Every structure is written in structure tokens, then in C-alpha cells.
Amino acid sequence: MMRKPCIAANWKMNKTAAETRAFLNDFIPLVADANNVDIVIAPPFTSLCAAAELLSDSPIHLAAQNLFYEEKGAYTGEIAPYMLTDAGCSHVIIGHSERRHYFKETDEVLNRKTIIAGKHELKVIFCIGESLEEREAGKTFDVLNREICEGLKDVPAAGITVAYEPIWAIGTGKTATTEQAQEAHHYIRERLAALYGAAAGEIRILYGGSVTADNVDALMSCNDVDGALVGGASLKPDIFSRIVKFKAKL
Ligand code: PGA
Image 1 (cartoon, rainbow, N blue to C red):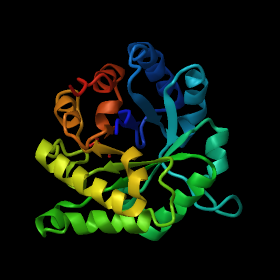
Image 2 (cartoon, rainbow, N blue to C red):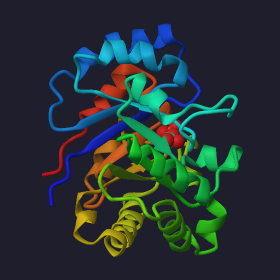
Image 3 (cartoon, protein in one colour):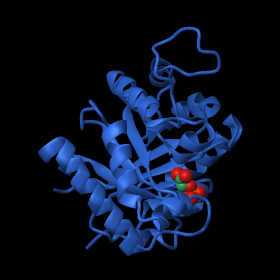
């Protein structure tokens, strides 16, 4: 099964609308010849419309970093799925460890978010990953299994991309080794196969956590690594374009 690689930028709480425009004006020409990879960019909500305008003629996909699990109504400060599609998003990141940790988003909440995203035909980058404490206690697979089973319960396989992001590797400069990444991705692939059968073969599994222009080629050489979710190194057009143009698997 050939899965098209996907390289996604998670800008987190960075960049104004003007900074978003400046990034894209530089970045779009840099990746004009990158045809064999899906590129996704997730700016903050306030920059989505600015990004959508500049991406209207581009194959680059626009993602939000979060959404709320209700259709609309009295939920002060929240953003509904239809607002994201209206703003030009085709994708949404759900379950990032920062959402799970700082905003106490539970597996059940993330499951509701994933289900409503699918109803609005938003493709989901669903993030999972263990903490250092969990890894050291030998619980990595248990955590991944729980996050997959509970988060993707009653969610169809179509439109799902999974991102494996070991929490200890996010923003720390500590990347998982290729062996650690491959081992976790292989396990995730098996769990997805148990959940979805043959359809699991089409689900891409991205690696995230201190991906840089220097380590992306090695990570992308792992059999079960289909792409990357990039935080810090996605904020500069030249560096992120180099990541997008990772050295292809032979
Ligand atoms: P990082 O973030 O690349 O800065 O480690 C990745 C992420 O949190 O998605």
C-alpha cells in the first residue's frame, strides 16, 4: 500500500495575520515543485482567513489547531466546525498533547470532536503519544492503545491521519530515534488494523516531536512513518520547505 507522504505544520500560538501572509509569500514558491507530498499548514484561528486567501490557488491544505464538538450556540470562546470550513479549512488537528495537558481534554471529548469534524468533512490529524513517565514505566503501548480505541471509537477510517507525538520529544530537541519511531508506528498500524481492517492500510501515521531539516530524512526512511507534524521548525519558510522536500524513500 503506497501512502502519499504528508508534512504538516503546527504553528501553535504563533504568527499574526501579517506574519502568516509574509510566511506564505515566501513559502509557496519554495515548494512549488513538491508534488509528491501533501502539505498542511495549521495557523492560529485568527490567521486562517489570511492564509486561505493566499492558498486559494495552491495545493497546500489549511488546518485549524482545534475545534469544538457542538454545532453552534452558547459556548463562549469556542469555534464550531462549520466556521472552520467557512474559513477555508479542510483539516483540523485534534488531541494535541498540549490540548490534553493544559486544557484537560479527555479521550471522550476528543472522540466527540473527531466525530463532529468528520460530519463536516474536515480531515482530522489525530494526535497520540506517551509522556516520559509513561515510557519509563513501560506503558507506551497501553497509552497508545487507549488513545486510539477511545479517541477513534465510532469514527470511520476515511479522513483520519494519526500523528504519533511522544510528549518527551515535543519542543525539547529530543527526537525519538528511528527505532523508537518505527516501533511505535508499527504498533499503531497494528491497532488501526484491528479497528478498521483493510482500510487501516490507507491511514497515514505522522511522526511529531522536534522534527528538523536535519533529522527528517532519517525519520522518513522508517517503513511506517508516512510524514511529520512539525512545530518549531515549521515557523521559518526556508527550514520548513526543506522538511517538505525530505529525501524520498528509495
Ligand atoms: P515541535 O512540536 O516540532 O516543536 O517539537 C511538534 C508538535 O507539537 O506538533
